[in-house]
Image 1 (cartoon, rainbow, N blue to C red):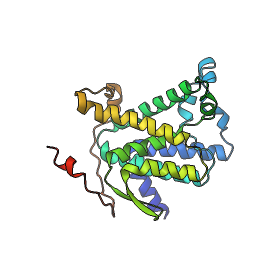
Image 2: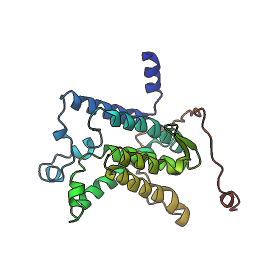
Image 3: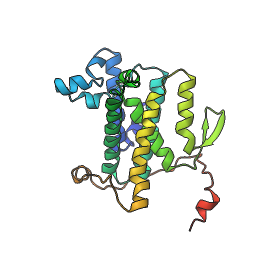
Image 4: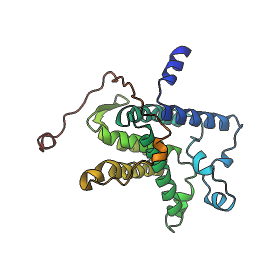
Length: 244
């Protein structure tokens, strides 16, 4: 069993493995009171006035209590982050890292701006950790990249991957969780998907071009992809198939 887990961990691509490790270590450290969450949460005042810039990063690593919600998000992180890095971003590790940096920047900007809007400031002031939102952003981007894959939710009903973010959002509302984190992830994910995939097809311009210094960090090594079992694809719409 331990060997199987070790093998599974080693087979993860580098960004997924690094983020998952940092998230688990940070969350476990806080649960054991080795690390204090008060030193990790997003606080614009402390960032600007006391130069605690690490908070811009650490708020994406802490997933609060180690409960069922934590396990769900670790599953989402391990699965969809891995699927994106191995498939949509195969051989493009720098582009994948840039996507995460873009998402983190958008989420942070939304929270900072939202905190200055009178009627929304109270709600945004409660968002001090954006780890769930960044994870949900990856789920959203994956669903947009793979809209015709058939999925099942807890064996209750089936749907295509295009509706996965909405199904998870509805589930969060049903269990009494705040939908704000998921909604922010969807907004960031849609912004990235539009600027990275839709807008270039419309205008032949790429506003989200990965900086050269990020590409210099990673060698363009091919990634061996094993197609998952029991994956079925829905048929594309008729007009989309014959659009040419």
